Image (cartoon, rainbow, N blue to C red; front, side, top):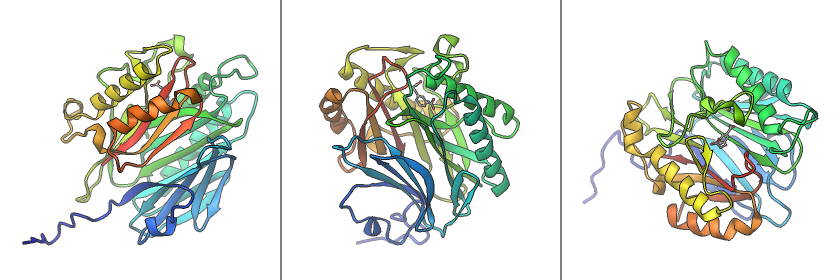
Length: 344
Ligand code: 3EB
């Protein structure tokens, strides 16, 4: 006998959802009954973000011409209102805010990065979405030098750190993030924030918090947390956004030149981060396993390593999970793989 519990819609779609659409997939079927908050196409060409069918569209050069294009679609169960403001495009559903911007290639990035982060924070505050949940930073030539000879990633981190510093009285802590290479000059950024839900930022017991990395990794440390748990005010289940995670123990890269070793450490790092013990350590209930990870993005520096990484990930993740692989640079020259995802 089937028992129906009134008020407990066990199969109700979450308020904010993410899915990957590949060429040939019917996006309309997969998003049926839902409203699109934003689309991010990881494809062959990059463009400044715009509005398309009433929602922000971000196009990032992350796939070489032979690789498959994938579009990450963020959907909501509520109607969406979108707009643009200066270079920013944004969309909101009353609870969640999606926003995107691009910085064109330039000699030195830090001031532009600082300005863009400040614009994003100001937009969040003006629209009332003051809990920052997740940020993605796709950096062209990430380990290459800027015009001053400083690595582009370190240059980027300087501008981002300054923005978090000047907003520290209003933005409480730093959320989960991805900082990864892309295939053309410039930096593409997109963000998720929310209005009434609470963001809890988590660190990894196996890793030094990135914002405490010593200065040998750059003049200003990276501003992000290892994961952010979104605790909705309503009865929905919490969502855990897992940052780009790599083969780093403490602050050291481990298993240099060994992609399988790096892949295993990365997966173990994620396992420890999302485990009930780690949530408990942060005063939070619940917890997850690798099989709960979805919307997985796997970044692999060397194309030759893709088969080994795919094989490892196929064992680790749920067979039905959305997974996409990208052949791009990682933010340290000795890191061969980085993995992110969302637990629900
Ligand atoms: C690391 O753990 C790897 O600068 O936003 C991962 C996720 C990394 C986010 C960022 C960087 C960032 O340090 C690199």
